[in-house]
Structure formats: C-alpha cells, structure tokens
Image (cartoon, rainbow, N blue to C red; front, side):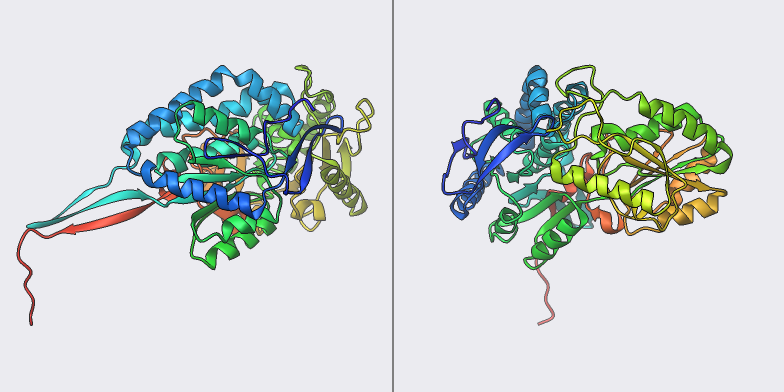
Length: 487
C-alpha cells in the first residue's frame, strides 16, 4: 500500500494507533487500488485527542500572536518546499489530476498558513474606548479547543483553512478529515510539528459519521467548524446548539452563474467550465445553474460543447490529464442517476452523459456533462449533484433571471458575466449568496472571506473575518475614581 501512514491518528505531536477502532480502507478512485488501511477513532482516541488539545491550548494562549504566526509561516515554507510530494499524495487521496493539485491544493493550504501567520500581530488587537475620566478596552481571546470536520474535495486545503485561523487566534484544534480522504491532514500535522508548533495543538483523528458526534458533544470542545453537505450541517449545528458551542458551517450549494448577451463568450464559457468541471465538479461553490440569455444561447452551447468534449480524461498521475475520477463508486452512481433524471425530465443532453470509454473499469469516472433546455423545476436544477454536470437554462430579462436565481434554499455563491459594470454590480447586489464573482468564477484567495447564506451555512473562512469566528471579544471597563453608590 503505497500511501500507508505510520499510524491512523496524530495526537500530542506523534502518530498514534488504536487497533480496536474499525478498519477502513483508503482507495485510489482512479483504479480501485487500496493505498492505505486505517483504524477509525475509538472513544478513547477522541478523549486522548481532546485532552491533549486542552492541555496544550492553555499555554499556547499565553504565547504572543507574533510568535504563533512565526510558526505558521515556517510551516507554509515547508509545504511549498514539498509541494510536489504533497500534491502527489493529494492526487492519490482524491483522484484529482496532478496537473490540478500541484497548483491548487497544498499551495492554497500554504497560502492560508502564510496569510494568518503574517497578520497575527495586528489581527488580534483590541481597541481603547475613552469614557471621560474612565476608559475601557477590548481584546480578542481564544475560544479553547476547536474541532474541524473536513470534506473530501480539498482535504489539505480545508485542514489549513480551519487550522491556521484557529491556531493563530490561540486555540488548539482536533481535525477529523473525511474518511474518503484521510491522508493529507496527517501530513499537515507532521509539518506543523516540524515547524515548531507545540505538541497537542493540532491533532488529527480518523473516523466516519459516528465519530463527529463524539467530538461535537464533548464538553471540552468550544467550537465546531464543518465543511460538508446541508443535511450533515443541520445535524452538527443542532448538536452544537444544544451546548451553545460556536459554529461555522460551510455547506453545499446550487449556485447561479448568469451570462448576459453582452458578455465575452469565451470568458463566460471558461468560467462556466471552471465552475462545473474543476475537481471533477466536486466543489461546493460551483455555478451549476448556468443562466444564458437567449440571444447568445446557440453560440454559447456550440462553443461549450466543443471545449467540453476536448477535455482530457484519464490517469490523474499523468500531467496531461485534465479531469480525473470522482471520489468513489457511490458518488459515481449518484451522479449517473442524476444524469438519467435529467434525460427523463426532458433536458437536452449536449455533451457527456455516461462513463468514458478509455479509462479503467475499476475507476470512478464520469464524463463532463452538459444539459441544455433545463427548467427551474427539474431535479438537476434544484438538487446539488456534486459532480461534473452543468445545467444551462435560458432567460430573457435581468429581473426575471435574478428572481429565478434566488429561488432556491441555497445561497453559497453566484456569478455574473457582462460588459456592463453597472449591471454587474446591480445583479450581484441582488443575488442571495455569500460569495459572488464578476466576470470570473471560483477564485478564492485567502485574503477574501468565503462562506454562504441561507441553507448554505454561516460564518466565514479566510481573511481577517475568520479571526472573528475563532476568537471572542472581551471588554474591560477601567474606573479611575471612587465608586459612588446611592445607598
């Protein structure tokens, strides 16, 4: 097994195993090869991880933000030095092409460590409030032990997106990666320790949906940050609310991407493809409802079809490959079932729609698929598919498309392509979503906040806004005179 880690868990600065935990396999989705076998966390492992985090956090909170940031920046440098190695592991873990992981996955994780390490000295400052002779001040203080629960699509990135702001704010973190992609987070924990992070501050434990409740309900856990589906988010938020824990929910979407007839068509098609086919469509913010104004529909679809059919599908370890498999067989079957629903409900299949011919049968591949003539009531236009399936819908006028774009329980993202900047800003202001793009799609640099509205979650990841979600404000009133009382 070519990706077998030293042990399943990383606790208190070292690898830990508990063979009493259920065995699960990490499978390379391109070939079906078992690349590692691990044990799920037992209750004893959960207790050990949380206790380690609690103990380490008390001392870490006394460390200056600048000193914390220095360690994170050192870890970012190590990640960049080992980018090729980490990218190769990410490809095995997820099935994403090495062409993609080498520029997008550990790189974006390193960006998060570098950014939060760099702003540490200023982002946690409070303010002085003059009150006449008296005065007050505020300060940002850590929450304590934070739990991060990751998704399978960007395992290394998500570990850093959650870990970096938590750590720089003075917290400890227990991170549980998806059982589908268990390997990358262990390497991040190694690197943080190598960079000088005190033992116990970033622990990684493995598990499935039964492990999450053990963490969420633990009395020593102060915050839970989840990246996952809306149904999972509802369950985690409900459990956390029962204990009044802080929560950040980065959930799913069915985001609109609106293309007006004055848009640069090639750029709009590129944005739509990146917003549907990158990472084989397994991106929560994808613009999977592509609204195209009727005047350019035919040209848009013709060019889109040609570019989609030219995508190179194959071995993710080959740098020429542009699209790999989806995460596992269950996800492949789910996506194919949605494609069949699209056909049955009357959508026009423009491209793809099945399993590619030139890939191993053991792989979990799906062709990049485009449907046209999709209507708002179709299943493929309402439900999150989380695969390479693009729905193209027609529209006539601005007010109409905005109303239709907002007619969903989701509110993660959205985008607009137009040469009319006044209209662009007017439309994004009207869209009910947390993250919007104008004349591009799915760019998420660490400097900007990322998160959703409505059923797509709450709280923000990245940027200075993330600090607010991993710390709380303490206010101190200072009296400079004697206390006067009426009794």
